[in-house]
Length: 545
Image (cartoon, rainbow, N blue to C red; front, side):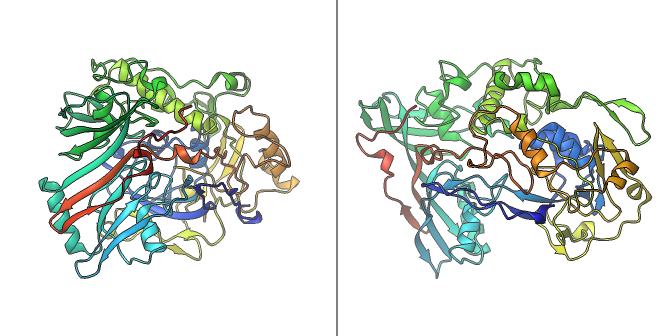
């Protein structure tokens, strides 16, 4: 079915760079934190793009393979396992402001670039083609880039990128030895003190999934020196020079928050809806707490959840292979226990609340798409035709992960456990055929069946519901209330016609970056800088709603 639709093309929006979604085969090696855990638990705690109901459905359908063999939700991951998927990747929009190459030193094998805010340095999460390294390779023609330092996705500014492995090793050593001098500029809330401020609060990452960092006594040492450049009374904000002497994640953002002057448009560390009226000034309570709560739908979707059940809960009974009813065990994401699973220390009640509110705010920005998710029924191979991942090499020759190699025909499967693998999941008929290849990523988006419409005879023989038609899916999605999108023949689509992913509203271009810019780097090769960003100009104003 995936190849029966015209490829979906997102609407052009001024100030945004958008690319159509595309099929992407990839592999990843089992991470240390995954070892010994069931696949469904790993997928549902590591990724939040789709509902719990969808993730179980996708895995029950046999769309993910481990070491080339079809995996199931209860597959236990082991050290050295290779997980293979094909995803329909929907990359979020980034700014249309171009990447600038400020210097290309051919002889010394490095470039200096000015990275716009909103573009991540590396391919990660939903981003691939819209990452800095892919842009430099594909748009600028550099054969290989070796980034040795990182800027946050929302941060703009100067980056020095080696073009050879030897130059990368040299600069990596300089960054690790602390000999690189770095200078940033930020616009922060309030009137910053006129005297030099030194902040040396230790920092700790407490939620890897959301990338949240806090001041914590068990954190890593961090040091930043701040100096006021100018106070603008018209916006009650200050432009501040920041000199970090360490390179911790979100160091400048968290130190400025701790001082009571968060970056003025930071969607995380300056948001009262997340931190409360104090906005994290002076840090938060770190007393450990075991209190957790199951995720709850937004109020406008509560009636829908009450009538059809929560897509974020798997606690309903399901039919196992033998036809016996069995209660599905609660997974960490269903109970709220996934909050803190990746933290190196026990979390406080305040930290749990911050993470919960941050997740809810992200869901709201994406129009609560997980709560509006539609799980469709599929019969047949859940992948585009001829897009089959090549079987893995011997374990000692496997790479860490990345784009997968594909073959033209699916590998044969003779495992009797795979041949007899028909399941009924909450009335949703799914089938993993003997030659099912790696299909849609259980980690992000669904792939549709190639032959989704069984004949009436086939339906009767299987005793299971038929595949939803396009009109039925449209009706099912449209019946769910939502906040940011309109439904109707003349309006924008609210789902992807290839994978039925609930589409997110477009962000405003001015919300894609924060007022933090890497202004200058001094290394052994010289001193390199960019111009001051526009928002650092005296009297600059912006939409603060």
